[in-house]
Length: 231
Ligand SMILES: *Cc1c(COP(=O)(O)O)cnc(C)c1O
Image 1 (cartoon, rainbow, N blue to C red):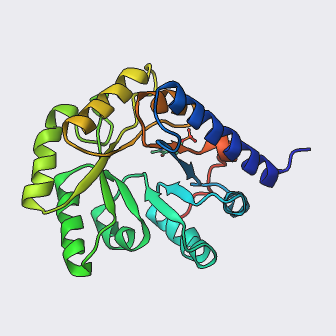
Image 2 (tube, rainbow, N blue to C red):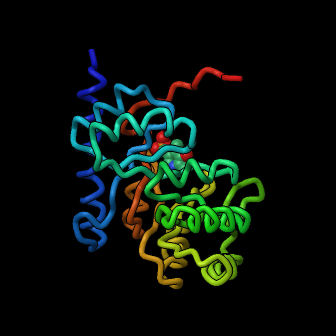
């Protein structure tokens, strides 16, 4: 019989060890890449198991789901750091700004404008990463690499936003390594310190290329159970 709580702690320990090993092999210092535990659609007991094991860095891809889980968790663990890794609608900006420490999915001018407006009202904003559509896939969110310089300039000059990093989800059916290398190169060229890339199947490759954050769900918590549909 497996125990989900022990499994989560063991998985976290193993993945952190693999991350540090991949970083060392690439000549990067320990701690150069941090593990975001992606807790979306997982039972709260598994998130609690990660917290009990000392993990504090989490990613969620929906504002409503994060709002249902994290304010309560933060009462017990005030040092939680929460990243939004899913698409953000402009009508959820206010809630997202209140809830998240980092928004990784800034992907269009209207969202930049809405974030800037909310930042002026509140006097603060989460740290912001721009999502890059590294594979230039037509159906996928993110700024195409060729449009990135103009978009970053618009964020800074028009909206007064400071951007800390880039994130990507490479095409599912391709070797991710060249896409990871491209994202790191873009970050370097634009003087951006943070690079969020790599998931359960490829986080070691992402660390080897220079990820500062990897986003891992299934390998920590197990296969996600689809949520019941709601209306
Ligand atoms: C769900 C999700 C992940 C984690 O995926 P796993 O394959 O379960 O590790 C990472 N990044 C984003 C943007 C996601 O939506």
